[in-house]
Length: 396
Ligand code: ADP
Image (cartoon, rainbow, N blue to C red; front, top):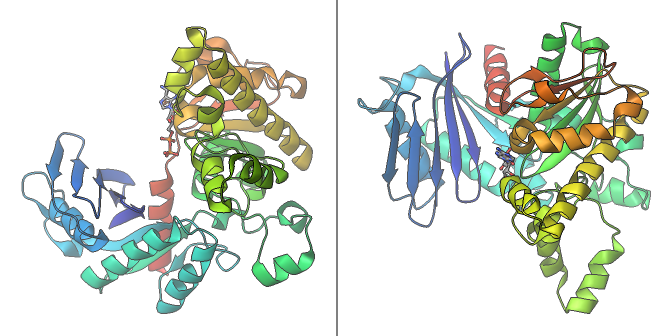
């Protein structure tokens, strides 16, 4: 059984084809510049095929992906029938979806309704779903939501302290994101620790361009740092994370900006880019800091401090923690960032072993032998979770 996993952005489409008998990756790729000109990168492991191909819309991109999968030279399948199902990453499922679902007309309508909560993400996700339905009408499609893993959070974690009618009427609440990643790495942590998932308290730190922390008690997300939108919480590459909301009107007045322009600044020009003035990429900031750039150092310090504060608060939320997991681009690769964050956590019994921590992009328990709270790096694999959910749903 082969499952195609799609992640559609506004001008991009990431894909993977996985064999779900063996859970092996057959091929992965990326269509970029959809609606502009079009660029395909198709990576089979043994060879990479790259081509400039016209992609006026997502439907054209899906067709190009299917052609690449079937291509006698660089493809991996002989017939479309080998694709048993398609799993789509969908960012926002609102309060409707507490788990992955088989896509029906009703599901599509609700995803469209949720676009108000994720205007940059849900519309392209939906475009990808519609393109596949059109091209492969007989193949079942599954939606896997970034928000679903957090849907069981208690009200004390998801309610904002604003008039309750706003929650009732407009569904203004914390939703949380990166759920697929938090779920994957926390389940994997339980396997590595050799303990039942249901008996563990785990804090997962997904530190990529976007970043969030999650408190997982007995396999359930009980709190997470992103909110109504992915702007809340940690300092990120270009996003501010938590701020005093009055900043918005203050910046509008002082800088003569509209509300939308101010939100764009908080989403795209803030975070470590905003503080450092150097870059949103931790490699560039680390380099600048090592050359004496004070603002780059200030950005790294603020970043690590914020992550550590969230971890501390989630240890309180769960009244303890067995493990802290680092994942995504920064979490998997930045040795320095992990080291700095862990320095704040010795009071809880988490202690990093510098030698074991000296590793990038690989699974490792980098705790000192006697540490009470284990610290782990686990590379995330959101596509595998999407493919697993897809397989399970179509079996039903
Ligand atoms: P996305 O949220 O776009 O999926 P990723 O999880 O791929 O992001 O993370 C991308 C970020 O990871 C980059 O912006 C960079 O800051 C960071 N990163 C990648 N490799 C390294 C590295 N070797 N050292 C430090 N940071 C890294």
